[in-house]
Length: 149
Image (cartoon, helix red, strand yellow):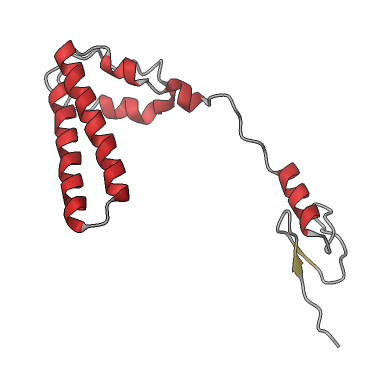
């Protein structure tokens, strides 16, 4: 004679008694085929939205980030971004430690170029009210006691 056991629902993962033929929480049957489980899971899982989320809509584009820079600073920043992207790709496909070290060095050079492009540049202040995704925490950080501006 088999001892009684509880079973877990395939859909909502609720625990059910051994005598139950359907889930007490969602009503899904205890014995179901893989296709039934897959279909019920797809119905229960919300579909990803094709439209941009609010977080994506509030992020500045690369053009917006480069717009306050002078031409030479834009060129240096673009070279830095290309160097960083290329080095990340190279780091992904490299097979030796020497090439990986060179890739990390070139990545650092790309970061240095970006820092050079933005160092001393007169940038407009960040408009926190337009960037709702930054939230109140970012606003409190920007108003630190060390900020004399």
